[in-house]
Image (tube, rainbow, N blue to C red; front, side, top):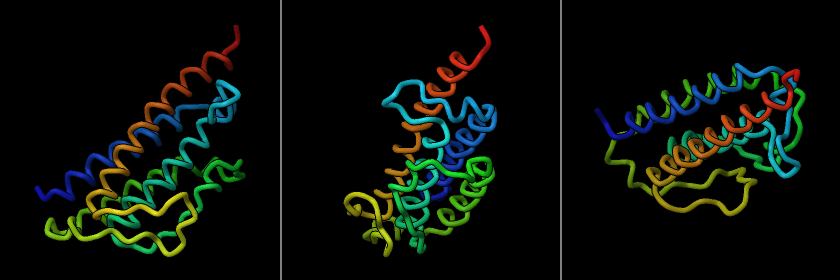
Length: 157
């Protein structure tokens, strides 16, 4: 198996788990912030979607993918479509990463033309893909904890 296919498989699993976790929550649970300083499940999922698209599909996959990181943390009217968009992202990750020949993973990654995040990343395409995996896995854990806490606070006592 090619190296990029391994990355695609792992990232697809993480994104699919995010979609499954979010899909098991009710609307009230998804909007619940377990602490005043914490993000709700919808925000965490939007951030995962934005960061994976930017780092893995955009930089790693060398595709034109805009990112507005600040918007990922703003309330959105289309949160009902998040699960579907996450499932589409899993397919997009597969499609873009499985096409990368191993000898191109060491090519320099190029920051997106519309990079509206903090500092544009540097490093190789591999670095960006691995950052997407690391970052999404951390936030998957955060989402699962947020879901557990939200279920506790929204359940009838």
